Length: 273
Image (cartoon, rainbow, N blue to C red; front, side):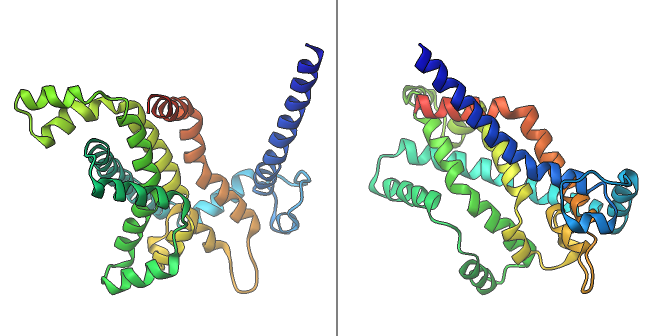
């Protein structure tokens, strides 16, 4: 018993230290967003000598194109998440129900997509070859980048749904489309909520793909508006930090409010599958 208590105490101490290390950058970003330009440029953990709470955030919203970036992020995120939910849920249903050689090969390709990173440069040239506009290409690439995990998540959950439900629906005269959208898809609600939240955070926070394909300031998403505060001779770091805080607030709020659905959806899919 004493050894178990000692091990638990040491483990708790290590976890607290890890949590503290993770919170240090968060503290630095928030504190520097309240400093003036010279103090923010030092990027230290000291408290501001003069708090610039309203001024920094007011200047950042006024000069940074935040409203336009927020609208762009919302439009791109909503489109990507809707396509991901529809495409990946139907794809996972077909892969799970049809035990053919082709379905196994596609399923293997999905698994490879979980471990192989997306190569930006070849993808960029492919999109140019297909004459896709930059905005359309960004949406397609963001969908493709998140498809593997979403299909994997749905496949694990669909395994828990008895195939007898499909057979009963076919006997009653239901077609493939009616079977899926009227019978199977409502049963996928827990994993669908999880997929929506995870993909929302992934697409909203995306930086690498967006910076390559959204090469115009008017098309920038909210995370990319940070570039509006960098100049050739100086950088307004206090506004950069304020922009980072504002950009992460929607994702942080969504995660804190709905984290129980993320855990329950992923766990149920893993255990039942």
